Length: 294
Image (tube, rainbow, N blue to C red; front, side):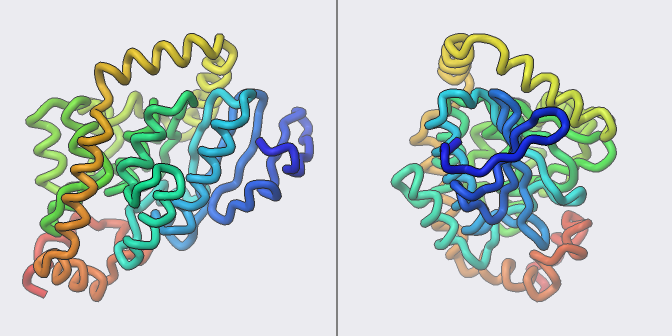
């Protein structure tokens, strides 16, 4: 990272980046050799709002600029929420922050940039990852989740919306047409074991084994030549990563749809009932059925 960052060594000789150079509010970053670990901490429930998007942009820019960083691992400080979803009250603001990386106000293009990056990215997931949170981890190269606590959902169709961050592109390629339609049209919560079976994630692991597994994998990958990372990602992306234009189209459809009166009525009804509050969203899927009646 930036040479102006302050670092302090722990007993294992691991350097800790204290966010002085990056000025990150919602991410705590630690560097272990060629591996960078970024812990998401955006209380009260890790909503993807402008602050988190701003910090993700800064982290990606600086990690890509630092040749010694090869692998980027994302974790969460909140055991119940990895990234809950976007902050629906600040859509224009978080989109403006995304534009600082991609030149366009679209988190879909921010996520596409992450997928196409030279960095190898891994999501270590505990807790809920819904909506754009799911799309963020789908943009990562690999996803590993705690069997006991990880919950996945693409609930946007419950508001009459297409997921705007690339879910339709990723899930259809990973799961096939029928399961992608089931996941999105049902707006249901999916546990880690079913998510693994469907191909949403690489593996579901016991929570007490997850961190050690991901850290070991990250360091193993980081120990191999960078040229291999670049070539493999380039060829795999040529097969499996949708073009940026498809992400742009989904983002535009979400942006248009969210302004639709029916979508706004459902969003407002959900907000009145507790949407975007920590306790209410613990069982979000069960509360979406009758929004039209409120």
